[in-house]
Length: 267
Image (cartoon, rainbow, N blue to C red; front, side):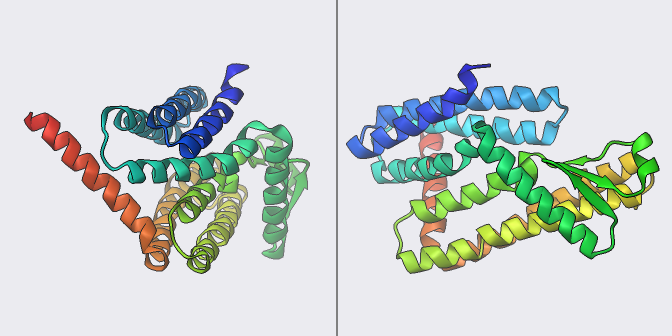
């Protein structure tokens, strides 16, 4: 669909205008375009039976609609909402070019596939790469029945990395601590994601948990997913320790959300 790639870039423009001119309604429009984009993303994930990713996308869609509503309907905490919009702008600038421009996404996928294949061979897991994103086992008979591993954009951890980039550089804090928070989050997330790819690929080709398909499901859908959640919690904790301003932003938003909606319910 032609309109989908345009939506996030329109949102980026609206976020920038909202921050420059301090216009809440313009920022709200940006969040609506993000929500519209998320609706297409969720539909694509459901079509691929990726229900976990689809559910996360729907959560972010709801969050975007909530931000749009609060920006229009409340006059309080202006600095809070413009800071959140700044975080969204930075995140969007770093994410959407990779998600919507083929050359950038293909380049990131290729680099991730190449690193994953190299590490697998270092651990004596016999594999080879087929440009740009395929990982094949050297046991050629395997591919007579089962497919190779295909690295996609989600396998690069780009979503998690840009979220931390936006949060770190969106809050007001000394640059020294921002850079420290960056180095304990983004490179660590990418490195752990490479290990995740190595684990899932090894389990699939090595049939660690039964058949290749069952091994892939357990390694990718269960163990790796739990590992990602735990690692993101640990990384977030490290970032919040180094950059308490980021934690203050999260806490201020939830306090405001709780106060606003409890007041509306009582009213």
